[in-house]
Length: 65
Image 1 (spheres, rainbow, N blue to C red):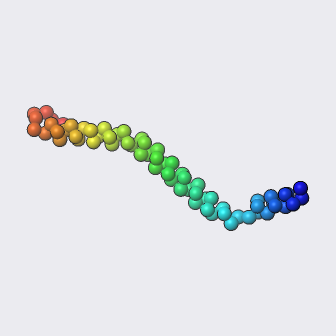
Image 2 (image 1 turned 180 degrees about the vertical axis):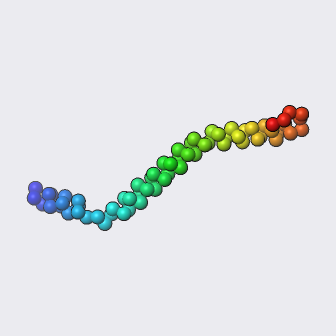
Image 3 (image 1 turned 60 degrees about the horizontal axis):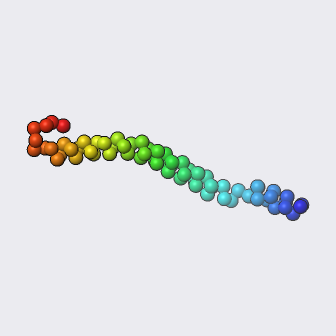
């Protein structure tokens, strides 16, 4: 039991992998923000492209966009 507590204490004090974890958390946060932004803006951009497509396809008619 004493060896297990000593091992746990050594692992707790070891900070060699801390920067890697911080980078992983930072990259995850950036990916999450980018995903939310793409999801939110995706429908708006899709609607805008649909309107542009409609206007271009009806360019020869008298309707105005």
